[in-house]
Image 1 (tube, rainbow, N blue to C red):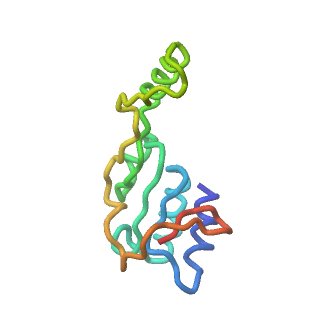
Image 2: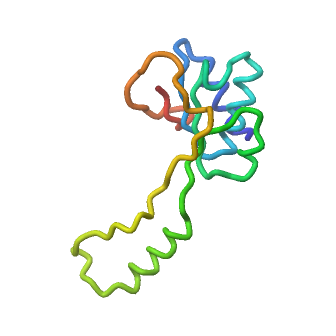
Length: 129
């Protein structure tokens, strides 16, 4: 959480601060939420926020956090299947639904003007709109 707080301070102190942050994990997103709240910013009214991992504490937060849930059991099963698969590597790729999905909360709502695709901030590595 401390890393998310530090990154949020850097980003929100910019002359043109972001209106959306995609955190590398839910713990960092919680840190961003703390800094935003301390500055009087409401998620998602002033800042859109997305986390990653869907850790259990996310469902207990006062402001629901949109987070990405990875189906690790399907990914692991797919990896084992690929290891045991006897098809050549150049064969058609498999599609078995092992992609991540977003668990919607209030955090990903619109905030400010659309600024196009996120570009990582060189100091924090976080995507910034």
